[in-house]
Amino acid sequence: MAVDRYLEPHQARQRPGTLFEDLLGDAIERAFGEGVQTLPELVAYINRSGPAGENGEAWTEQSFQALMARLGQ
Image (tube, rainbow, N blue to C red; front, side, top):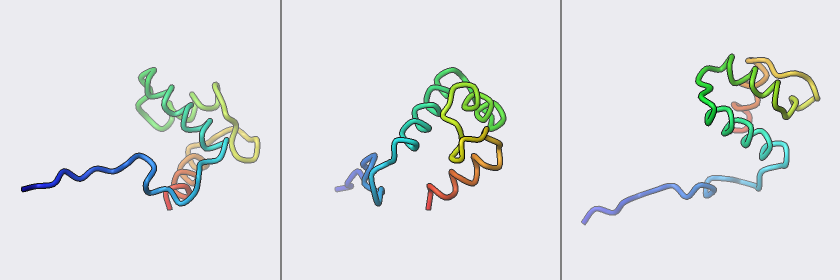
């Protein structure tokens, strides 16, 4: 008998998310909900809606990709 395998949403986390990570995740979800589909559109959306980048600076495609790569480790 086959067993269905699934990933619990937070089972792979090594630690709880930070407030910044939660705010960024919420902004990304809102952007997708509004039909944003490309990286340039996503970066522009987050720059309009927040949160600001880690150093309080505007997001760039490169800074967004670097943060996602770091968070994905």
